[in-house]
Length: 209
Image 1 (tube, rainbow, N blue to C red):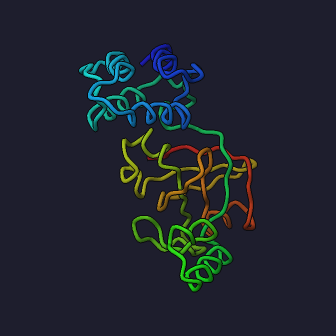
Image 2: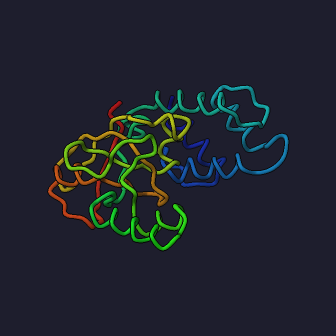
């Protein structure tokens, strides 16, 4: 798919038409999807651009069609098609202090949601033990998962490559985070990159598979 088509979609969504489909583009699309009504003319226009039935109703098949289009994007448009690399910030999660803060919060009788705001329980979205130093794992934002795989669950156990300061690590997606334009690294991933939690570092990351 030519980059100009991605730019047309971005123009329709009123975001920067740079031909790079990232969190802001997907977030603008999600905002349109969330609007009420039986048919959304903005979505219908995008469906027409991606060669899908332009009924203005965005479902799983519409997202799959968009994903298929993005996967075929010229590498000159996105750096590596729909896979990245994406420039974001890398932060830490599931480190010892993170887990301890979560436990202390729970002892105060607070809910999991309240405690996730201050720490982490060390258990990934699909049950993995993220609080360890042997297997590199990451947490990604739902927008990034949906933009590439159509749903958050579609990103489960997918491999990514994160690069900080010229050093890279491959890790699997095992959890989600609530802050956009961010990717979280577990203790094992941080160790491979020589980072000591807590940290917030400029990085590039990409989907490997």
